[in-house]
Image 1 (tube, rainbow, N blue to C red):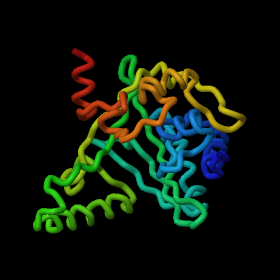
Image 2: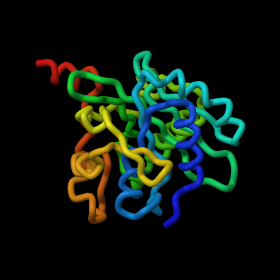
Image 3: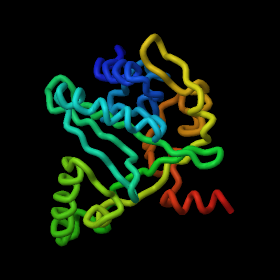
Image 4: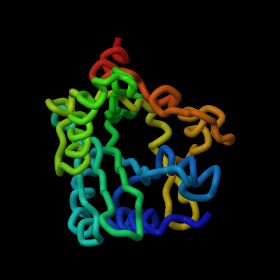
Length: 226
């Protein structure tokens, strides 16, 4: 499996601007286990420290000129994800860049999850509930800046927290000549995915990702400080 050219382009551009970043989540898993982006993946996952955000903002004109639409996710005044969505046929993969903050020995980033419908498709009232939700989701995807803790997003989305020992992100190494990854990436993958070497059937990130806490960032941080 060859490396995705949009991934290489983005990595080269970020590195050229002096941004400290690394591949993450499913992209890191795919490159480590399968040598490239996994077939069922819908995005390219990158992460960086939040204090690099001004450098990230500086690349937006170039990203847009390449044919991407930009959407920024914000939680309680903090931008936590920049989503670059291709508007050209050559790519179907979004590029998601998560911004991590430090808290003691941990790094954290909000995680947005679209809540499941509370009623079955077999229920006659399903579409009365589903159609407004679908409209909200379409706006969510396309809006330039989304404050996820405000209405109407709170009617469809719940905020969890990605919570990772920051030691995994303090040092990186290069996979090949172009792609940075956490230095202890195999240990990091074990923290996130358990037995990551073998594809897991019916794996669901909200329930099975070891880094995701089912609480908001402020709740997770409060528990950590106790």
